[in-house]
Image (cartoon, rainbow, N blue to C red; front, side):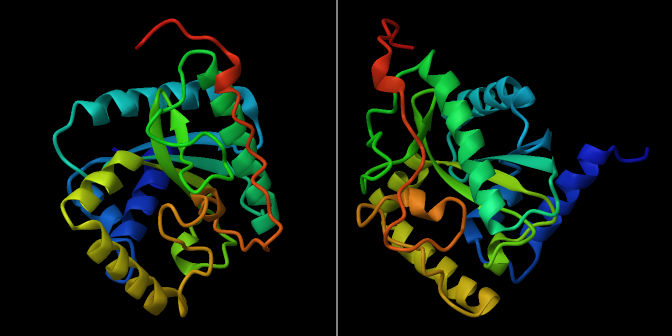
Length: 230
């Protein structure tokens, strides 16, 4: 049976992760365990599918919370645009994250385990009261490890990193990824920082920011009163 366009795009993504030189060992572990959930969407600038994207991520959160293993990721891959540069990808990334966050704020409070101020060193992105570390990939990234044929947004549950840290496995994994990325990209990513040193938002898109950069994300969860503990 011939692959659909969506199946072909997901296959290409998985093939890139499985390349021997690809630096992220956590992504490789998630792939080996069949714990990467993917959705292929249309144009990254279009809000038409945002509700569908949010439902996909909500379903992922439910599945992740019911799992008893680590290394889970949700990936949204966009078919278009393919001719974007780093600046445009950065703009579209924050546009989609803002839209999803606004819709989430109507239903859920923010994950209380992390800060909701994007400038805080304890900040993480939150959906359905679950904190995420977000990674952007696109064709024109300055980092080899962030390059992919299509623009994509990867959502990694933040609690996984905390569980690894509690068992003394986070720092060794982090060191291994950075060493592999150094070999893969020719240098260490200058935007990388350890959790609680600076806001992780600076790492999301992969773009090189200057010291005056301010995250454009506006968190509106605190403006809405929620009476459900769900």
